[in-house]
Length: 488
Image (cartoon, rainbow, N blue to C red; front, side, top):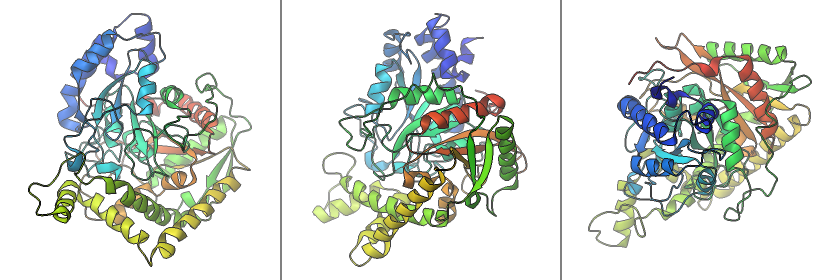
């Protein structure tokens, strides 16, 4: 193995090399930076890098810590003190974070080195990373296709060997969907399992920070480090954090896995459907029992999601007005002109669309008809999951209805773009945990093979079982070992 091979390693493999002193943290940072420099013009995964700060941290790293000396990329909606915090938006293009998010504090305490802020859909609003105000990110498996979103930069960097691991955020699928399209592992923890302090809010009752990694074991390691109650986040759960890593190995005999019939419908790409059928057979060969279940309110999930998420976005983004921080319009005629032109110039089309939608559903005369009704539907969706989980340990489904689509293909069709998250957003409404892992490749949609993702869902705080099931499947297959042939 040469130093050029280091960026393609898993976190746990790199951990062994660092602890044995086979490589140094400085060598890891240097090799990773060279890899990024070589392929970044092709994929556009990063918005900023600070090599000198990373090298200084590497020289001081304690490799005996859980993540000692391991660089971790961070989505640019998560605060890293002194680093840019732009949310890929013009309105924050010159903003730098004044403090660390709690998840970043815990990464640093575990010895990790935050290195690089990754590209994303502006304010995490999108499914393709085309809504970034800076540049689109490209899928390393096919540079003409999207990496998914909104954590597309994080997923593409991990898949391309331009990140050892990364943190993203998931509001309606923004970790799991890009993980599926890029062929990596993406974990959405239960709501409240990881502190949201320092995460720029999109929809506060839906947002969660989580890992994107090359293996389930790596995802368990990052969750282990970042999970836990935080007094700075009143929604974080005061529950013990299990030892996910020590409990990762598990026999699936006796495990009951549900197949929600509403998630296996017409319109799913045939190759995705075939890959899921093969995955189901793998689970049965591992001793699991597959049973068909029903989540009857699934058809209403995407409608409820886009009412609740846009309403919360409208409220959360009201603070971005150019008064205290961020970019502002020049020479305003008056305060109203200042607000109007600052937000017009600062926000992109998709963010404006969602603010307008959210303001509408919260407005007098429409609140009961839209927002209140959506919250009632949310309760029904939660009850659906609670009822199903009385009889099964987990659910499996496609993560996305089809493989990665071409850049620009859905830009003019917001509704079709929103449907890319049709299998993921119900988990956010219900607050349960979910993971996407690679389960195959589509050969017919493109001249190049495109990854297919398998979604596994478990009850709230069921991450131990979730990781066990995902790890067992991963060890029985080799999909997670495949990497795109992207040369620097």
